[in-house]
Length: 117
Ligand SMILES: [Zn+2]
Ligand SMILES: [Zn+2]
Image 1 (cartoon, rainbow, N blue to C red):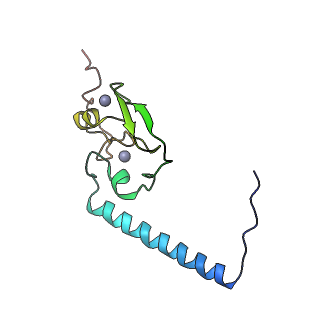
Image 2: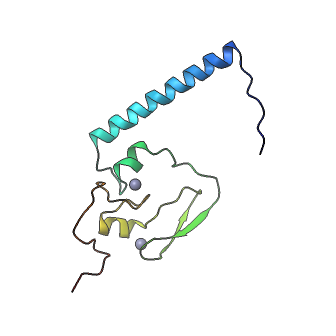
């Protein structure tokens, strides 16, 4: 792959400056939202609900089986969840990325794990 040279002049520099500053501000806002609500919401972990920006995927109807129950999920774009709503909720896991919703490393088995006899 080959990319064209980026034109550099006074106005592209000023534009890039403001874009970069805006991204930093945006990131600060997201981190503040995460700090205020580290356990996330709506079945998503704090990272996925506050910080991650990969909610917008390619515009193609996408299907993906749930990582636990194999239920076939359908999404309106290529940004998909790892788990169905039921499995996420039942196990306290983030639907999007599969992390613990509170991002804690737990010792106790999760409901989906077979209990040790
Ligand atoms: Zn499931
Ligand atoms: Zn997550």
